[in-house]
Length: 480
Image (cartoon, rainbow, N blue to C red):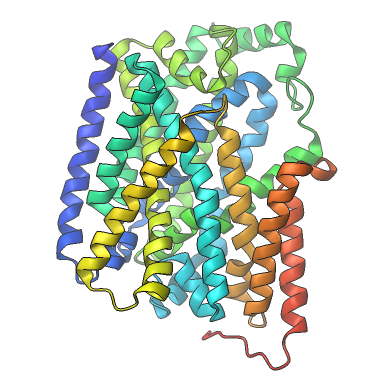
């Protein structure tokens, strides 16, 4: 083992676990276990809100998978990835104050709480919970694989052992600390991600002999590597433009991001988060994907894309600094999987168990159920991660598209359109999820667009048409 590299990572993990155990005292003494464990009692300030959104969104896909794809496709993938610049802006501006106010009125702790009160429908709750469980298993699998790849590259341990070590660390942290621990460590992790990206980008440019030489080397290998169309010219204008729906506008429909928009403490915090989050997301996404492309002349011939970032870091940086920089993807992966675990656990415990199985469960029973469900979910995902693909980014993007197809219109139109009703929401969710899965399996990238576009359009049309068609005799449930 390379202890010069591993030591900074161990220090980083020690800090993260210290925050987790410190946060546990809030879980233990809180008057509302559910609100504290799943929402941190809605006390996030602007900086922490921005960093938790950045760290939750910046994942194994951003730091491991994204650079791996950029390595294979060239600068065209960097252009495509920059659609993510608007992520935090769209979530907080579209949902904004109204979502936080309505969520407080409804006493909503989860996104499904909001949908349950807005549409007064058991079907909406069950479809929502099923969608979160199905699609977030895919996303969590990507995070488990990314973390295991990182531990594997640092320690030389077999992939399976690396996977078990990573999963065990994350599960202990989340079970002990809950949402507050995730949010606070996200602030630390966001800073680490920013600094790690900056250091590695500068070191990669230096190792490649400067940007002009790197560009000339790429052009000499394949001129398409420096074009906006990708190494194989598959990144068409239609596809790149439609990708903006998946990782830009559509992020409003991601439950793991949306729940952040109900957890800040005041308007000032939200406004600060919009500015800070946009700057940090923009820099990290640009920096990490440029690193992936610039790595091609520095470490040519890499076969597995997900290993590009760890291999590059070990090559261009001194061991101790490499350990500090590799804390960035570790931070991204841990923060994302923390948030996903909390979200899936809340869907099962809060939205299914407490709503329909045991509504009058005691505080002790709720705690036991929450901890047990979180642990079981983490263990189940291990089995999916035992046979990893070469590029985890596709697992993550599949999850994104599925969740957006289900949630984007019930959330947005539920807030801003009084006539939207449960029939429209149910039709939109079922059609969105069903069409996305079918297209992804049978006819991906229909009409040259990303697979998410057609399901999102179909779910919008069905929501509006069915809501209008069922207006007579149906009172839209809304208190605003």
